[in-house]
View 1 (spheres, helix red, strand yellow):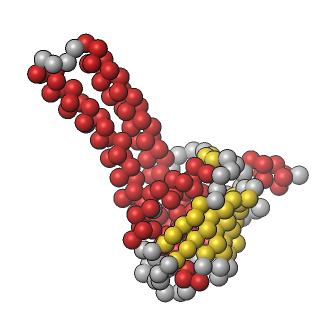
View 2: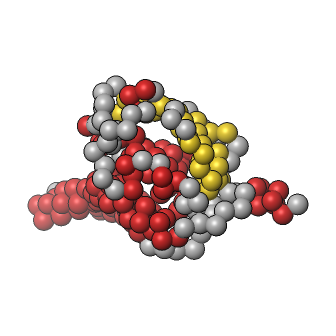
View 3: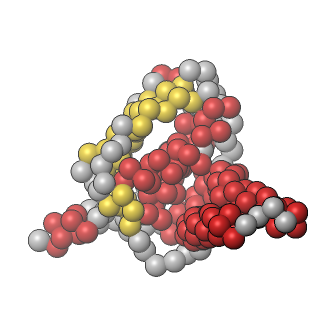
Amino acid sequence: MSIVADTVLFDQLRNEVINRVMPGLRHKMLGKLQPITLLSHVLSRKVHAGSADAAYVQTQVDEIKLNAKILTNATQNLFTWIAQESPFQLPADELVSECLELLKMECYTNNLIITNHVSTRQMLPAQEARVLLCAGIILMIDKQGTEKKLQIRAESDSIQFSWNKACAGTDTSNTGLLSNWDWATNISEQCEIVHSDVDAQFNFKTALSEKEDAR
């Protein structure tokens, strides 16, 4: 797979995607912060009341440290969405699950039911996969219709979308790049997207595919 990518278009698409997933990222961060706030508040209150012995204090401190570590990891993950860092890979099932989690509320409010069949641990280029898979999901979210259904599957280094007739129309609430699939041609050197009226396939470039191309 040899693709000459339109990097300017990819950056535009990335910005649109980040704007849409930002509420989900914010909610995810707040969810990790709340236990630390609650534990700290309870510990402070008991210490000031003189009702906390050493064992209780140590238990609470250990819980706060554990949740702080979880928050640190979540913060680092947030930075990988926003910052243009060096390429890295993540398993396909984690990438798809993350995209669905961040867009879960939008799917619910826009009548899109997604069935995720992806269980493979195939490593995919994370930055490109996040942007492109979220872009495809957002495109389906913004389609005008009810009882929209999207199936997501994986095969080798490819992620496959297939949808029902309710997702196949041209009416959309999106006025940007994600109003249609025109952006998909030569969008990334790390992924070739093949699409039709009823499905789309994201063929990612992995370490294995690069070796095969070199032969």
